[in-house]
Length: 430
Ligand code: ATP
Ligand code: MG
Image (cartoon, helix red, strand yellow):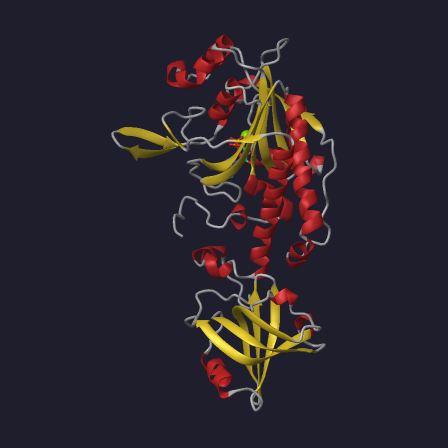
């Protein structure tokens, strides 16, 4: 019976394994193959005079990256990976791979990201690439565990919607029978409506669609958002939750992903410690103004250059808090004593923004005024506004980008490395 390659240890007598042909070498009287499965690599050694003819003819025919089944005896041998080798009695080609391969899986030839993404199925056979997705998986597992154990209900909300969450132009229109519809840019309005439904603690991990026109290394047109909303919580409480979740993801990777971190040559993996500094927006602007060329003043958005300058100064994860109401969405709660400032926050990694959140406006009249003040028409939001007329708990929440979390955690230079099949301006296939 087939066993994972990792479980073929020098102490095992006989084994049957399946996997891809990682490498093939013919040294005259001896052939060596490396066979790879999800768990590891094993050397298959073929002393040509000592194995059945059927094995030899299969080995002659096989190509790199073919899928094979090999059964035989295991011998301890120091020089081979894992300190053992397999001498085959049977060797079956399950699926023969064509040559040449569109992408070199053993990484002798480094490939451009675009070429890699074109053949992502082969690219992801490379242990270093697979490691990123193992780590992403561990992060998501930590997030789920944390939220479920804190009593959150996972919800699923529509991705096909009639109106924009925040107005704006970053929307993909789609044909929906006789109507125009859009791909949702955020589950914001729906998770808030579920506060009106009394669910108190909800989360959704799902796709968000942004028609950002510019190809950058930190934007995707389809991204994964970890979205959370909590009733009777203020912005401070959901910032603490966000901090805990980011730390839980790092901790999970630290404790369960060592071999993957090693593959990625990440020796110093640091779990960030809480509390993350809370940097008021006006101080952040002050730092940026001192450090960057282009002029920046109170009320401006924090662009890429400013983000980088402030990040360098801060050095690790931090929050930017107390934003001007004018540059945050209408649903962010203004301070009562100074409504020009609101209870919004961004969670920052020194390299970029990871999350935005806020305490929300839960008063119907104020919400309508804020929608109007952004130049939007409250009528197009009536499905969202109605729940605020029938008892709405105060609430707060945030959205955290899964790809950015993984990208910054692993120091990946391009966000496309953190998603299997990225969608960007030029890429719709595969
Ligand atoms: P940025 O200013 O960096 O473009 P944003 O402020 O437009 O981000 P939000 O609407 O606040 O993004 O979304 C919350 C989080 O979702 C972001 O902090 C980010 O982690 C993630 N996110 C948003 N848009 C994208 C995108 N196009 N690609 C990848 N992640 C995204
Ligand atoms: Mg944001």
